[in-house]
Length: 311
Image (cartoon, rainbow, N blue to C red; front, top):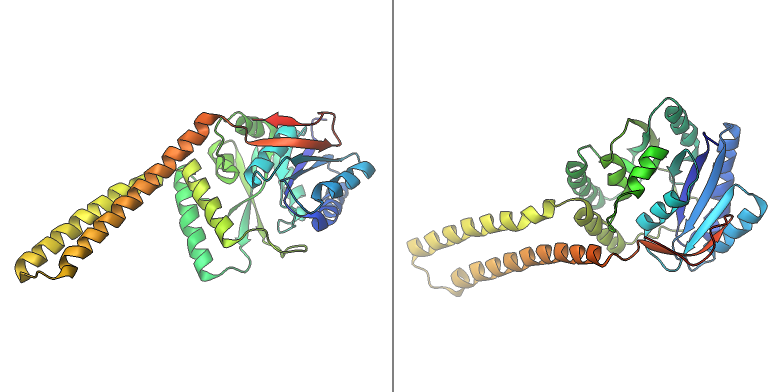
């Protein structure tokens, strides 16, 4: 079907949200007379998420599902959904319904007008602390420079035409950042704004530590900006060394502070620089091993079989 819409829903321990999310999404699309398929990708959940998907699929042929052999992360789940999708266009949306499905018909209408990427942009970010907001602003500032577009309000809620989906799937790197790459590939783009909703039920699966790892992984996967930091730190160290040297010469001080402070400062900066470089070397090593982005252990509502290993 040339106008089929594939809705991709990554899910991790979202058993209680699967049925309500499916009911809401399918209800919105049915009301708008949009032909669709709904693909849940279970990211190695431990709470029966895939069982909930299988139950839905048994009663509705529009619902399909895939389950990972373990937790591979949200980016892998999104790319798995894109690879399984049969539609002429695809929408990615969170299972907790913080992305409002009611915006999908608006995205679909823009696609029918010829837009190949329709970005969901946040008009509000919901309840966030000042520290989280500052960290987010710094993170997306770096991502925006890499993508060549302002990504400060972008989200994983977006629609992609089949041509954009195929372009993403053709990328060979293992470390992927969907939110940035979907902008990087280009194509004719439009935007739809939305307010971040409260979670449908349950608690967020993102801890501070997970968010930090997510940010570091995506920054190093998509941007080489951190590699400039060692050079910047070296310049700062050189300036400080000159300042301390001049101060020591003028005051003639022989205190331990005057000696130890610049030593520890330089040592810390050197170690930090080596750490950044080492992290990038590790990313190169991961890419060189060519391991698959994810492993699909089970599927439902499809005839692709079982125990699929997908790169």
